[in-house]
Image (cartoon, rainbow, N blue to C red; front, side, top):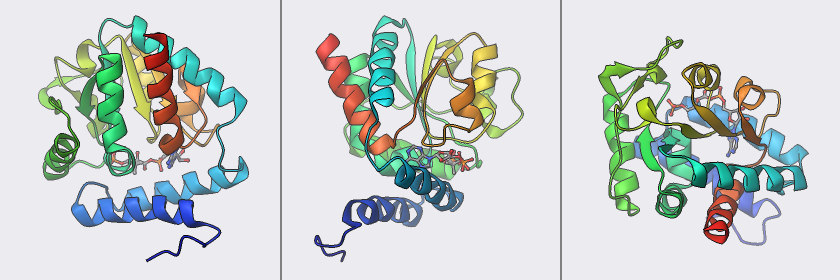
Length: 212
Ligand code: PTJ
């Protein structure tokens, strides 16, 4: 139990969600390392949403609402940190939810899907081996025909490397949430929100609802 009086209470509670995600088989062990990196950047920005991030959130809400086939891409870390919020964002924006993970595991994909359903998702798409996007070698190339494959806008909360670039080469607009402004995802996105997903996604839901 973390005492509420602990000066790092919020940060430690978020960390606990990731550890829980690993225990449940939703988050990969690599997700713990990724989270640590994010924490370090969050510490530097004062663990607050910056004015620049707020502007990016406003632009993202507009882009999501303008899209014909928006999709929210969910990995093991996002599923552990903001499952209910992902479902809410999907409901508010009309974006589909699709599981897309870097470290291949059919079992984990299904666990993420069930976890999101437990939090209210009606439909969660899974990647299909028969359907892939171009310009990508990793497991992230497998997508769902009704989801990322035909999406015009993809919302990508925190992930590794080169997929943002590949998605763009496949003709999609990409919104990224990443605490590291130097990451490939952050640099290659159409819109980048430099913020923690635990703060950015609730603000994005609010903005989408306001615009609607
Ligand atoms: O579930 P999988 O198999 O798809 O794996 C997911 C991870 C995140 C493990 C995988 O994509 C990975 O290894 O990512 P990286 O290369 O460690 O990059 C993760 C990025 O997310 C880094 O730039 C971190 O700074 C950033 N990050 C971590 N936690 C957060 C974050 N950005 C926003 N909010 C966070 N909570």
